[in-house]
Image (cartoon, rainbow, N blue to C red; front, side, top):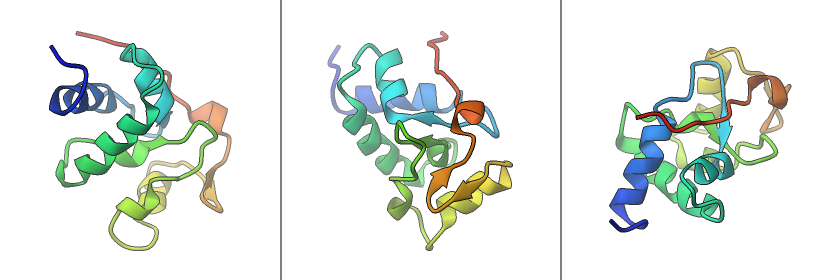
Length: 110
């Protein structure tokens, strides 16, 4: 099985669907749990491609510092921030506050 393309994106989506309400994770954390630690950018591409998939909480995936680097892929000016704030996550200047407290470390489950 190939580690790139649609298969990789599907593996990313399996992890992303597990992110709990009110929590966030990073592109790199998802890449790491998939065994492709250097593929954080590809995880970002997968999240961008997920904007039409309602069951993928792409708004819960941010960069390793808690910045909303993918926000320009969401409709409207602040949709990503609004979705996070609706879950109780505080965002100031595109930065998640108390990042360590709301960070979710992904694990692979079958």
